[in-house]
Image 1 (cartoon, rainbow over the protein chains, first blue to last red):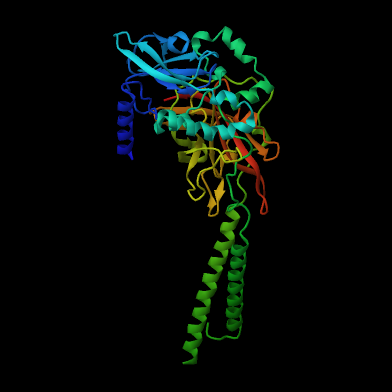
Image 2: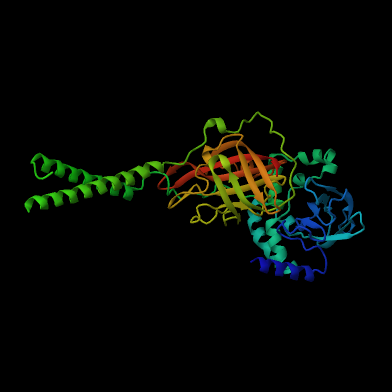
Length: 241
Length: 210
C-alpha cells in the first residue's frame, strides 16, 4: 500500500513536472512546493496555501498574480517548518489552472497550482449539491488525473469566512461575518457539502433483552429448578444423599 | 448396587442442575448488562446564552488517524466517510465495532471549521465504539491523532440528543469560525421497529495540540 502510494506520488510528481504535487495526506513533509487547499475552487472562493519547503522561515510573500489575486503573505504557523497564507480567487477569474508562486528567503522558488472551475459555482442549491459531488469527481479526474480528484474529495472548497487569514482579520471579517441563517445554509452548498440529517450509527443489538436469549435463560433456570426440586424430593425420601 | 446407582444419578442431576443454574444466570444476567446505552443529562446540553469559549489557534489541515476519549475509554482508528445518496453522513462498516469515521470531504480535526466524527453505538453483537458517548461530560478531553504527527486536543462543550425528525443540520454540521469537533453516534429512544430515534452529538472545540 505504502509502496503504491509512493509510486503514485512519484508518477504524479513527474507528470506535473515539478509543479507542486500536493500530497493528499499531510504526512509527506518536505514536499517541494506549495500545497494549495482546495486545489480546485470556484471563482470568488478562498484557498489556503501551505508550505514546509522553506524550513523555519520568516514570513514570505506569495504571488498569485496569474489568477488575478495579486500578492499574499505566508506566515509561519505554530507548527514549525510550515508557513500558511490565504488568498482569494477573484470572482471574475476564468476557468483554468493557474500557478501560484512564492520564494523562500534563500531564494528557492516554490510553485503550486490552483484550478478554477465554474462547476461548483453553478450548484447553489442544496439539492444539486450531492450530484455535484459526483460530477465534480468525474470532471476532475478527466482534468487532472486521479490523484487530484481524490484530493478534491478530501479537501473541497472551504467557506471564505473559515479561511480568512490573520492578515485580514479585522475588516474583511466584518464583511464575512454578515452571513446569517439564510446565507449560511447556502454557502456550504456552494463550496463545502455538509451532511444532512441524522446518522444511522446503531442497529440496536445492545439495548434491550434479546428475546431468544431471555427464553434460553428462563429455560435453563427452569431445568435447574426441576433438578433442585427432584434432589430435595429424593433427599426427603432419604434416597441416598 | 441400587444405592450406588442412586448416588450416581443424584450426582448427575446435581451437576445438571448446577450447570443449568449457572447458564441461566449468565444468559439473563448479561442481558441486564446490555441495557440501553447511556444518554446525556440535561446538564450537558448547550447553554444558549453563553459565549463560545475561545479556541486554540487552528492547526493546518491534516487527516485524522485515531480518536481517543480517555474518560469513556475510547481509543479507535478513524476511517474516511462520505455521504449516502440521501445526503446524510455515511457510517463505518457496522461489523467493525471499534472503528469510527470522519467526514473526509469536510474540515479536518484541528483545522478551522467543523470537523465531524461518527461511530456506532452498537452493532448486532453488542456495544460498539461510541456506546458510552452519551456518558461524556462537559470539559472532558477528546484527542485526535493526525497524520502530520500532531495530536489535536478538544474540550467537550456540550452533549446533546437530537431526534431524527427536525435534526438541526446547521448546528451539527454547519461551518464554524473556530476549530470545532462533533462526535456523533446513535441515541435517543430506541424501538425494535424503527431503531434509534436520533443521535447523540458531542460538541467540542480545540484547546491545543501536542
